[in-house]
Image 1: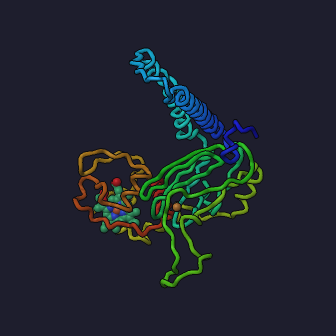
Image 2: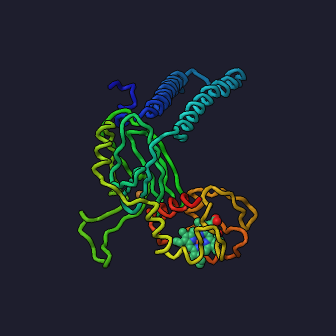
Image 3: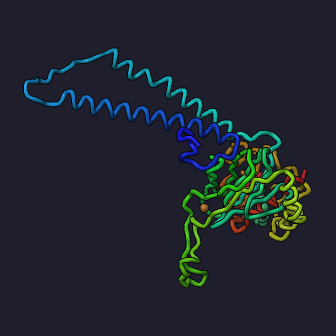
Length: 326
Ligand code: HEC
Ligand SMILES: [Cu+2]
């Protein structure tokens, strides 16, 4: 490990794009070191050379146009270059490649739940090495932030919407997952009794791990989880259990509320004249905050009650069920 490598300050890089983040980071770091040292040495030198002493009289040096313009213009290509490098890296890290394995991440006070494409869940995330993984994240309560230093990635989980992140681990091993958005804590139990300090829970205990397996070990791990509950079946059950069927049909007939048939991905006019294309974020908002966007023709305020009490998992299942109603 060289002191020129950023791993001298940061933990081991475990993904392909981490190398680029590190290269840019080192470049900016060492550029700052060179400039800092250069400016300090020059300052000390000038302070010494032009110090006040008997027999010397200060003479104003006047204005140097060449120096002034030069110093203003010289940093521009450097700064534009740094911006370009950073922006390109940011875009590469924002857009997941097609065929990435999609994992649902749910943050809550105080922990993480990961759900694999087959519906299996766990509190730690296992991923196969050398395959892109896309995380689709939501929060059940307050702001959280998913941070994995070894991957050099971080993104907020915002209540009421989905955010996403992707990475491609390039070595097997373990990484730490932190929450980097202060999300509260508690020192009392449900009955208001003071807990022992070792029992305190909060932001600091919102820790997890990513375990990068070989494809073979990953397949074994998934098989070991058994057959999970099918989210579509679960969503279908919730449709009646939660009483959505009192207003919404699934066969296309429209009563007091729009039918769920053909809802996914359709474009709809809203009361305020805007058009909305139905996606996960819109559905989530329509369920949790029905009056945020009201479908045209169904009156204002919306007669739909807010379902803030639904768990993230239930909302996801309902959305999965809606997608099947073509
Ligand atoms: C009391 C009647 C009622 C119940 C019960 C109800 N809704 Fe609604 N819902 C409405 C009405 C009216 C609208 C259209 C106005 C609006 O956008 O809020 C609507 C709109 C929606 C939309 C947006 C539809 C679109 O076409 O864009 C979704 C999604 C939705 N409801 C989901 C649900 C879910 C999930 C449940 C059950 C957990 C539920 N609703 C229960 C009345 C209801
Ligand atoms: Cu948190």
